[in-house]
Length: 418
Image (tube, rainbow, N blue to C red; front, side):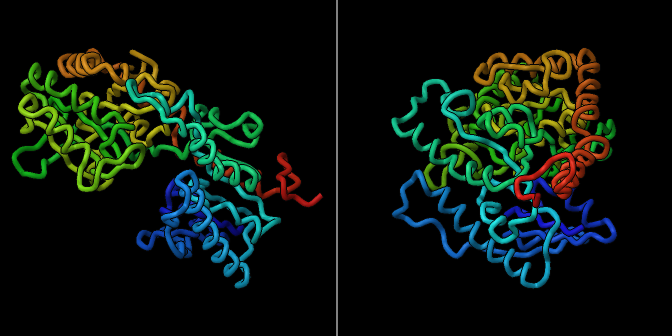
């Protein structure tokens, strides 16, 4: 089988699937991407780059769309070069978020396309209007409606779609949901598992943290409001004052992935440290920045209380990995989290904005670890039974690929010949 992937940040959500397909004898796998580093065995990377950035005069509603067009153009050109060289895939897969799949069917009109659809923007029921006291501007709804141009282009181009969670699928217009399959990328529970002997050496070399310590953990790609960084930080003075042996380990960068950016040179980490001032014992708060995956796993494995907070937005892999590692996850009572976490069954749910409630939950977890042992065991079982890579997620992804690649099979894709 010949397979063509497209994702600007290789391999993105296709790590496990591309690696598996690349390792199968007889397969030919090509991957269109902007990322120059990283590689997978059996996967041929084909680099592309947009010729320019969106124009300064482009209407701000349309900047994301123009960026997608610029990406899509170059992906189409790279795909045309592959076609000219004789490469005609049996199936194509790509993330819709950056325009990469919009024009693939113009190059390969008879090849089925599976799009990865992550988030359909809405004025109600998701991230917008979630933060209290933040009033939306007059152009919020028109801006979001226009921002969905890329979603609609991708939905019309694709023959099938993949969404990682039921809640994310539910955000898409009803007319498209039948083509969107809920299939998570999967968690490798053989790798992400508890380790009672785990040890984390702090960067300053002062000490080593273990599972015997009172460790609060927090992980995000970036330390920003969408992932509840401010709520976490505001809960720490109470936690650290009442638990004098506790340490807090925070993983994440200082950029902004989602939402409002601060003025150049400023970060949310610095803003929160300034706000909290002397009320926070910074000697027991350890900012690790972005870390290797092995270090990330160790952080989860030593955790006694893992805080995961998010707006109603895309669910992070890290929350499911925390559950798989046997963490006691203290999660926000928001829709994406509630799809997985059930209060006092496989984790704890708290109000995203309730600083005192977050602190109380963390302090009880630190003080009474044995009381939460069963919840931690159920947390891991949740991932094994619902999101395991080898037994569930990868087989479901492979089934989707086979389904799309068989034009006269159980699903008649839109480009199939009669």
